[in-house]
Image 1 (cartoon, rainbow, N blue to C red):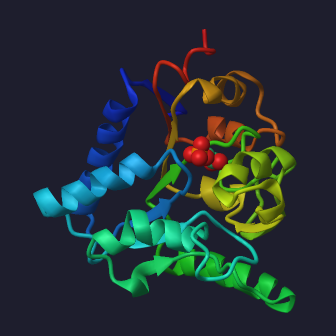
Image 2: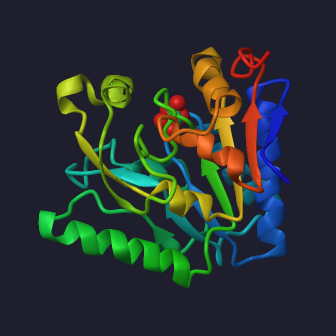
Length: 246
Ligand code: PGA
């Protein structure tokens, strides 16, 4: 199979459908390995997974997670670290053991970055690889923080954040000057190794980049376009994000 586009009637229908898939995966395979994303897009998905945990007994006790990325240089107490984001929206509200949670570190000495990234790749391999990877898409076409120019076979590494990405993050940080310039991100190759991928994109602001990712030739200028070559990649869209597809 190749890339599939799921045009949902609205965002909430898309969210429920992806959450149901994740729940089915976990019920069939309690040791499932999930790849998780941050940003505004997956927040309602995490809300729905928390609801499934609380109301329908979905247990994450044996699940392992790997997050896509983390800003470099933020203090552990900074509310915008992805560590804090994930705990606020998901991890503190479900029964996943802390030892099963993997995220790149925000505080790394220059000399430790390479070994940290290699250890992250190793940990994914040791866990058996990612069964189900959730993605958003940035206006640069990034998946994770794989900004334009990221090779298809790139692995976990430090990345310089694109100016557009930093602009989009500025409101959360108060102003542009406070947005970190670097991050650690899984590579495109790390992401493409996942057995199944669900990219979520909602709203008109995503319409043009969704069109470029799906309708233009595969290019390292739009890392989401690499998903065209993945056997189990699924784009979950609402009418607004799909509006430029024609
Ligand atoms: P968003 O970010 O969900 O906040 O739109 C998506 C992304 O940058 O991957």
